[in-house]
Length: 507
Image 1: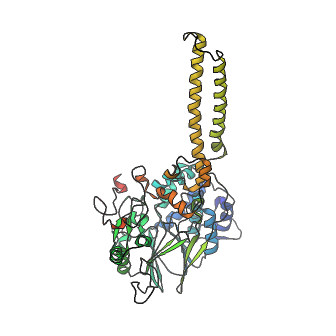
Image 2: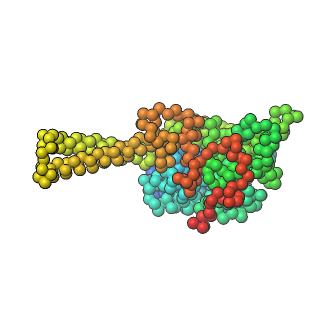
Image 3: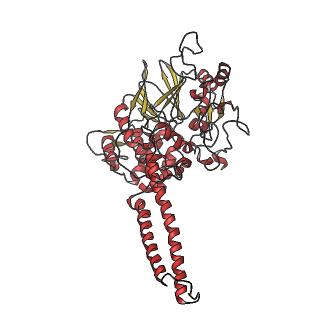
């Protein structure tokens, strides 16, 4: 069969079945093969991507689902955690929805997409894949998925992954006895009044830098913590927030209570389920400061919070020490299953290998040795006395040459030390290393880097600049939502969705 290939093939054996299209893949053997570190041939990966993309193209921008089902948040290349999710939560007679961000940060984005593609081919009515903001060229070049593809395969296959990403649907509506839930990677948009507007989007392209498509991938809700300590009159102003500029991402927007309430009411829905943000417990409920406490209080008698954020990559980047979670929805109840990270093979970050990691250190020591040797020759060249040396003599010429060599070696030693320090930082920071050292740790020695607490709040601070769209790297600083930013009613230049951005077609 077409897609079985290196994963154990399409031959007879337990676990093999034919898909609706007649393709035969032994999912169990493929899973075992990838778990053991096996690598499919490039032609087989290409075949899987093309088969899965053909199925995805037939789906609308919004996929309509129903319980019982599971909703999964960001995976970010954490393949062994994905395997655990599939083992616990996949059931061919139910549905499972992934809300995007399959790649980047972790070291196994290729394996995540390959396996999910195989599942989509074999179980097209049981597994559904949405697009996240990382499923695009801009972010996969900035982070590590492109480098991972080049290391494992080729640039041609990387382009095929990008073409596959362009076929992913944008959102889902989950219709249950509780009411309807809107599931999307990032959030809602001021350019989307009803779900019919999403159906009109041309999704078969790179994610634009502004507009409805961009907002669905990049936007965040207004955090309840930004209202802490607000007096009653200011709290009512907080509830009045519609859309404001996103200070953390630089693109998309932050949507407030007014925007959420209007969207849910206009579309007859009960809540939004989204991914896109880390959560210490794996999920977070946002009641928009209207959680019912007493019948006569400000809170509304709601059964569900306005927004659920779910994040399914435990101990994100090897630093966050967070739990992962998935949402379990039946017609009777909505619950969460939390989990911790699974053991995985150790992989040097930044696509380093043992040679490339140790070469700067070894070369630095070799250069230091050669520099010391030339220094000794320099000292011995005239017995250490240069007061009576004729500048035109051969000895003076030789001495000048030795001095220049020592200076050159000193400069090379400094350069190699810098490369070695970057490599050490990449090893220490792991997934937090986004191509450049976070400003907060620049200048720290390796020992001080190692001493940094692997705590959720520390990781959030170190990782903040990586949340910013690559278009703004070096031009602006990402900042967290705070108690004042939401008072901005619109961005300079008009609108909150533009943020100096241009559509991808304009670039």
